[in-house]
Length: 388
Image 1 (cartoon, helix red, strand yellow):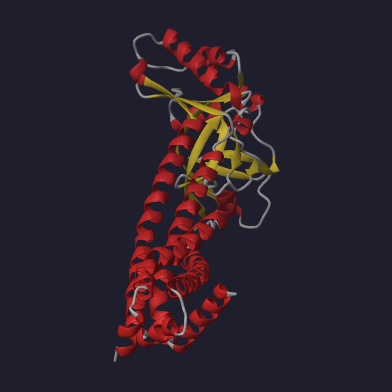
Image 2 (tube, rainbow, N blue to C red; image 1 turned 180 degrees about the horizontal axis):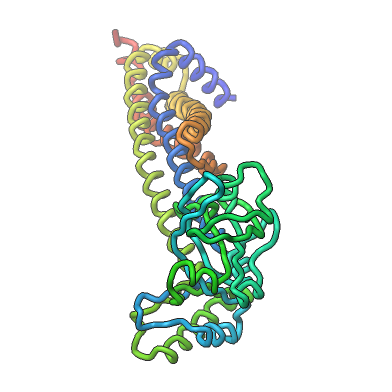
């Protein structure tokens, strides 16, 4: 009953000084909304990076060569594909080419590869078919278009069966890739995919500098990676600096670690404004104690105990911080959606972050409300009644 009465008195005091109460809560509102917006932006960016990496393929290992002293031949690729735990291997050559259809000309990336590329890199076709092993074997002049390239060259028309000019040579369109969007800042839709043998002719080089390897299961990836490193070491002794073997999961773990650190930093920076808001609450509560000294003296004179006065002012501080926290959550959600719309950014709201921000704001109210509440509870009733 005593707590309920203290809450009513606190609410009455807040209503009687509306403007001062709003200004007091402003620091908490800004702090909570800042935490929610900044952490949500960081988490949204982390999800985008994770999604981009996942688009590269599942259970993916990549072998890259950095020197002309290392040559990945058909025999090398066959040896890698025969390793235990390897599901598929896809060698790649790449470059830039000029494509033309009627009066439309464009510069796009070209990838020469085999049929396994579709599974290894999780690439699907929305129309037609993908490259086959027969296309590679017979050096067929066929091409699979990225969705953006298909739209640039053909608009809304069906490109399957049509011909385009690639570096001045006619190629038949056999498929169109499903849109994958941008991956790590690079568009995955403005591309051409051709058979490996045809791609080598287009880029003017038979050197294969990149091989994508898909493992059979996630649990075997470390084992497969070690086997690949041992195989490469035996094939190219003393040249470990001229090639590299990377695991997609290692990249994801690194990016996740960086994102978590950035999220904590942004959250910590935003939390400083919550502490500033707490100082504001303490300052206003001290002013309130001074203004209501006679009221405190009267309450003590008619029987109010020290804990009653302490509870009254502490509850008032907590209500102010709690109301500021709730308004801050609403403001953070609104600002987050506004930033997402205006700046075309991905925002990921977290219920846990909002709950923690609110609880932190309440704790701030308790911590910074204790001192003025304690000061009010220690006032001598006789001196308080004399206060003018």
